Image (cartoon, rainbow, N blue to C red):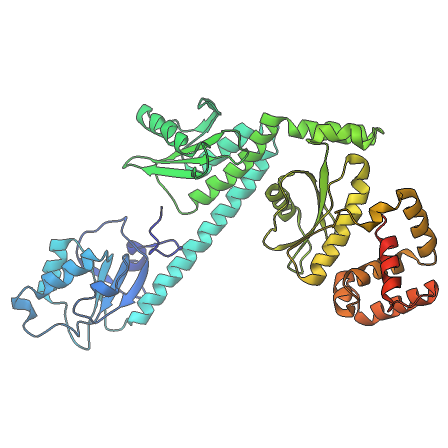
Length: 486
């Protein structure tokens, strides 16, 4: 796990900072380690900066805190040892206005404790050094994001090839400069690509996969282990069938975890399709529907006999995109997703109640068989409208028994058709929404995406066509009875 004190930005090589000609920095003590990095810059004139350091800093000081007799005692040893104990990456000493040269005792202490000591010339301000650190961080972050984006695109392209699993592994191995391997549910190597590692690392990686292989609640989804020669990582694939992705690379570059995570998601989809045959089953169901098979004959291929329909709209103003819709379907537990202009529809096998999803407003139908899919679709739409109007994250269409169940279905439908015959579909839907929201003009306008004055005009027209007083509770009850018929 990364140190929580380290910022989520790429560190800056100390050598890159020293190479900046505009700063004129010069290393005058400490090791010349090309791998030394700086996570941030911090200025302090405290005699003991230890309590104020998080680690990884380039600590900048003008020596204001140094007493006159410091060179003859242990002051500099104590000062440098505390910086090293706090995890400081380097010490920058500014010349002028306090000191014309860097104290020799400070140079000796930094050599003794192997802390890089950087001389900052008088013309260079500490603010300029800090700004240079942030600029180099921004450049590194931009390069990392570009690298991750390019890797994502290449992995997605690999997943669409005729041999998707080997292609994704090859592309991942190339991007991390190492070896990528897919382990099956029993721990055997299914496919691999890249530079094969030694036997010891290979056995260690196989052991690491057992840490993330699903074994019950609390099992981690990713694990890593590093040695001086190789960095190992294992990722449990989300299909839930025991597949694991293993990665071995000689180093751990920024962005490697993100790239490997993208590959794990793609392999989860690919292994899920391979293991369950759900992709072939869905294709077969589609072909049968197109060739005229009834829905009830096709439903078993899709995974169930009882279903619910979910309508969802993103809480943002943006239209739903296919990636977000697929993620929503995965969260709800179904790949049967339809992306419309403003609404995502998900056909979900009945089971556990659909849970609210962050960033989405959901309307859920009553449980229905394949013959009632169209009715359930209408119910989900009405539930979504009510959820949006009431600002609820999820509303389920009410399907509990009521007084309406005492009336034969055929008689109820005949009465509803006769009563509502004067109304056009737009007026019928407006009246239904208005009654469901207890006559609220504003919430009905929100649910229907129209102006509140439009709602008033439509309800007035409904009252005129029906020749009924819509303020009468008995009238409202009778109309609601009729409007609840699909």
